[in-house]
Structure formats: C-alpha cells, structure tokens
Image 1 (cartoon, rainbow, N blue to C red):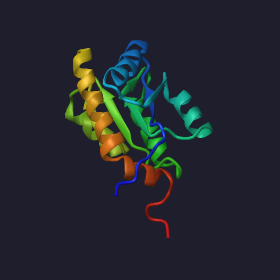
Image 2: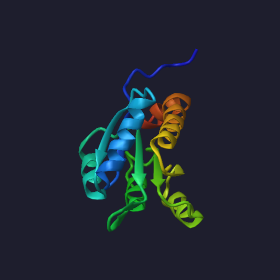
Image 3: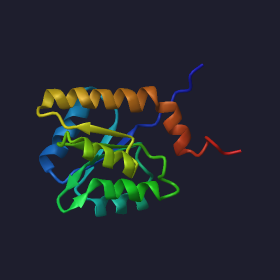
Image 4: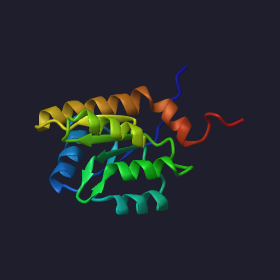
Length: 151
C-alpha cells in the first residue's frame, strides 16, 4: 500500500522579474496544482527565509538574478545539512549547454529552459508538479524528515 503525504507542497520561486514570478505562480494555479508558491526576488532574501522557516518542498531558481547567479543559492543550499537534499530546479531563458552543465555541477536536480509563452510554461509546470509532487512525493518527504539513511 502506498503512503500518502497530506501536507501541502511548498514551492519557493527565486526570480528577480516580478512578471516571471506572476507567470510561474499563475501556471501552478492553472494546472490545478495544490502547491503553495512563494516568490522571492533574490538570493539574500531566499537564504534568510531558508534559515528562518521550515524548508519548502522544492526550489525553482532563475539562473541569472540581476548581479547574482541562482547557482550561488543552490551551492549554498547543498552545503547546509538540513537543506542538502532539497530538490532544486534551475529555470533559465538560456538554452546554452554550458549553463546547463554549470547548474548541474552546482547541485541542481534539473535545468529547464523557460518557454517563451504561458502555454509552454504551463506544460513545464505540469511536468514539475507531476514529477516532484506525485511521482517523487514519498522519497522527497522521507528525505526531508531524515528517514532515509538513518538507523
């Protein structure tokens, strides 16, 4: 029998563009996701929230955040004991394989190119929602609770 996690999934979107923040939030709603989407504009705010609150279920990080890089945030997350297994997706306007490789080397679980329109973004968000909150729900919750690997 499959265990069901009844907690609401939390998504933290780190993007410096308010329009992109709104589009991502809208896409989660439009695909019927039950996830609560919280948007933040930069790495500093994200770190502050990650240090002071219960971690989200998933990070969606823009590759370029003004003068900062979303990869800096992912590298920081990977060095925090309580956050090291937090799934992180880089969502970028760049389709350059060098950027994708850099994201994976920084510790991103996935690199996704931002589609140019809302319909494409909805397709991406539907895939993210299905994979991370349905297919991987059990393993993600076990990792977050420290149940895997503990004796």
